[in-house]
Image 1 (tube, one colour):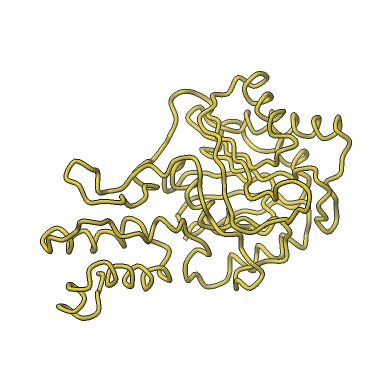
Image 2 (spheres, one colour):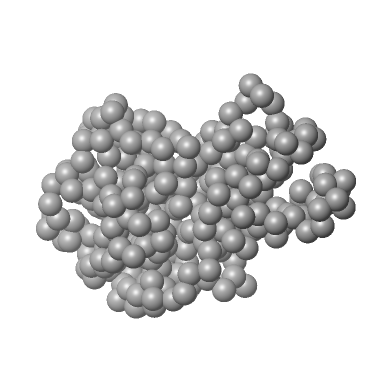
Length: 304
């Protein structure tokens, strides 16, 4: 297992100490400047101060990213347009995707519509960049010979549940991101052994994902309590990532031929449910519901 590295300190001071072009992937979840309480600091800067802060860390991130590297940045609605402008107009990076992370629960409003998504910008340093589509495909809805049954592109609207307070992996952090969401970013834009940077690692989700996916992660965090939480998290037993795109458990229709269905069901676990052992039971139930004759014939479905 590859050791993860944590740096306690201010990102604006720690980033300049790192070697240029030394990271294959950067995943950043900076403060959105919405007044959140992060224990020893609050993100309530004046507009100009926040933009100065944003420009400083983004310029450092650009320096640290290797020529084939990708950066993903989580950002709220108030500043995402400004962020986009800095990345494209000031840094000359290449826009690839504006990902919408949809979740089912969030802040309720009486006047206006309740927010139910966060945005993630994907930019690359050049037009030649790493993207492992096979590692992040989702199951097809139907079996068709003309379809690539290895799976479809997940698109740019993703549904991952928040890490609810009843979840055993929930940490004492106000903006903890789901592991399954970060898993997709890491799988798509890096390879085993690559270096991944998280300049604001919070509760340590990116480092935990890198640990399990055999990437070398380096994270920076200003709050010592969050560093302690992340350290404990990295030392805990791994039983599977805490979230999953619900589409990963869907069973393609029209798998009527046993000669086709059986090999596919064996592949599904390896392709789509790796690191999500807890989802296999639900998948088996879906198979039994969709193909009851197969379930009666063979008893409980077993996936090797």
